[in-house]
Length: 156
Image 1 (cartoon, rainbow, N blue to C red):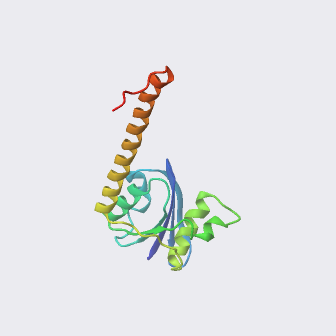
Image 2: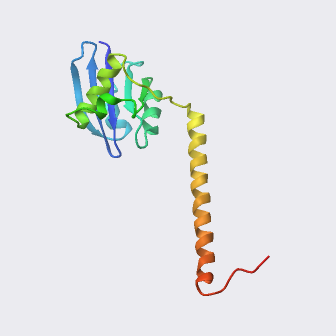
Image 3: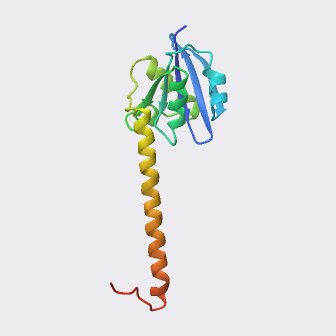
């Protein structure tokens, strides 16, 4: 049986829908985020099974999990996925099933998935940039305290 999987990822839990090649939803379950819970739903599917998920908050662990277990990952571009955004009935169950259906129909608007080294370097650079912003904020606050009392920094 060829299966297509749609995952609606959220911060604490994910909705996983598994659809067969005929378009029948075999499984549509809400699970807490984590390797064991997700693999409990899709772990028995063969390697190479296509899995679609939306580019949402902290999707990095999802792509790592899918690639580590041999699934074919497809990240959906959220702005181009009009089927989910414009649906009249909008809930996690419907969103996950819609992702699986769009993947099955080959109508999924995909976003580029950077390689693991690129993702790691980007994360490192984002972390560094945030630390630089924090350092600047703390320096400015440190200089603001004496300035508030009429003492200016030494010229130089």
